[in-house]
Image 1 (cartoon, rainbow, N blue to C red):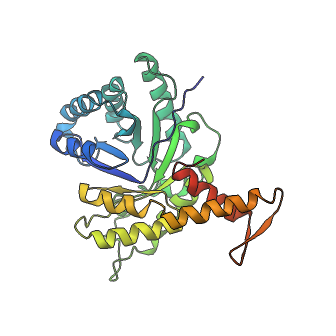
Image 2 (image 1 turned 60 degrees about the vertical axis):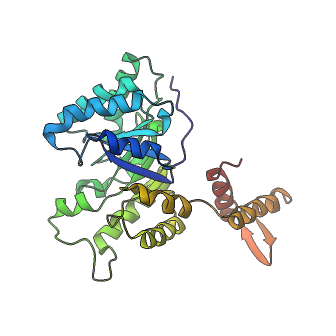
Length: 299
């Protein structure tokens, strides 16, 4: 029997290198919904053993472990098992799996987590999972698999995408055009992540913005992807957290409208269409309003 915990807020996910206690401390002290300690790309191979110990110590010393997650190394590498063996006794809220290539990777990670939860007295299913699902060429063809029926499906809480590792896998020297927008291949990756996450019923999370000083552009992009359906965004610097949180937090006007939509349908049980403020609204509008209220913590 599993004990899947309540999902945390997922507006902002702030990366911090797992070999820097200072940066992990800043991430943990920030307003980020999830502090994401990294054992993969930001840690050199020779530093990974020390980083594992540092991450485990950071997590174990917290009284708010549900929002402390760890990006482990890919499931196909020996580092993955070493990462999990080191961090699971500390009981992080979740693990972030890079270079995921379909449901089989989630199932394999689930089996590892189940064994380590049992070994450390953690309720089965307590450790959540997020996956980066577009970082290899093969992964691009698998984004629809996460909606299927497979072991560990209940752990999956979010899916995100990445351009840097994908461009390296493709041998591409550029990801963006002269206008600064992603080229078609990377827009496709973004779309496949969004569609795959929506099909799986989990949160789609936008990738990082490397230009961490341009906060105006960051907030503009965050608002645009939220309007497209994304539920949060990855961050690489503490300064990015507040603009991301602001962009993914419904305004008072949005919440008031959502409540009005819900109330209008409640007043007409069984109706497929209702009128509100001179507009005709159907059931998809109700579903959007209910999700917005749920994301804001309203039932």
